[in-house]
Image (tube, rainbow, N blue to C red; front, side):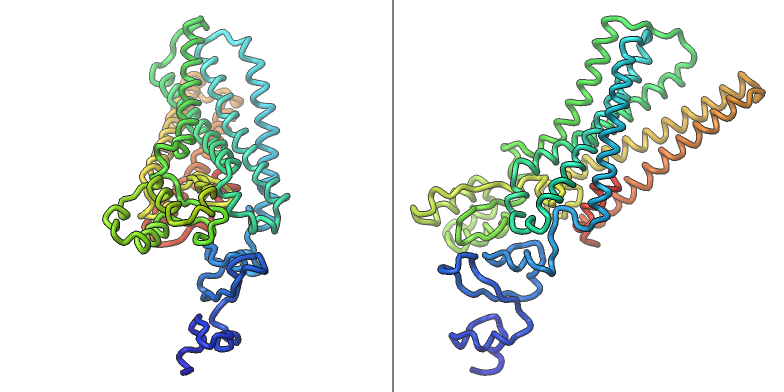
Length: 412
């Protein structure tokens, strides 16, 4: 054969001798069953790219890729540490505040205490999420790569995503509501405290339930079957010889277009339901019993985080950006509210005490430091995160590899 046919990823000689010594390709097998497998060659650019090309998974599960739920011992230790602290300290905080609710006599204090409990509950859920992710990595270890597909499409991953998202949102919404109540108190000035009444307790209960329901709704909406064309990232057909790994809608459409050439116009706008039916009709009765699993919104990464890093072609990009902007607005509101509250508190204390009480002055300075830390940490967390998400959407950078860092350290 001519030299140009050597190392072209094709067996032109019939015995593989024109490809065996080539260094521009990775050799694997179409399946991990010895009696039914054939040799497969792929370019090195498709090795460790996150997409399974070999039936034996060797292009993604090898010593080069190092695929784990959490990559690195530092991140794993951080997940255990932050998760344990969040669960233990917030358990103590929630218990303390719940025990004190029965002794509260004013409505304003009751509102504040309930919102503090909700903030603690949100942080507790995030801590529990971190502990479960860390324990999952500890037990799976190197075996994760071989069961990666099953993990990403599993209900366990979806539940973890719902828990982490609910925790983050309930904490944020409660913090924003608490800031608004305190800001309103400053604007109204000194007033006679309202005693706790049955009506007041009902209103506080409705407020807490609304915040919790809104947070849960944001987390569950991506899992609704009626919205699968927006939030489902791919579909798995276990045991199907044509589709290896998790296949995207674009891949399905290309295969279906090649098979059903006469329905090309319909394929371009096909739903997931139509795609699954067309795929099943491509195979004989032998494969009719093969089930399919969906890769949901939270299965885009091993840590099962809310999909903040979206591309310009992702149908869920509008939802992700809506939640990101909502969070940014909430944090800006929290920062502005606490700044106003701090300034007003300092001015009031100075006016009443004429700076004659050093204890009050010391307390005010301590309050200012706390508020400054809140504003600073909000800024260095969410503003860079949203900027990175924007750059990822615009295609300027690929931030997918940072998912674990943000989900384990930055956002918690």
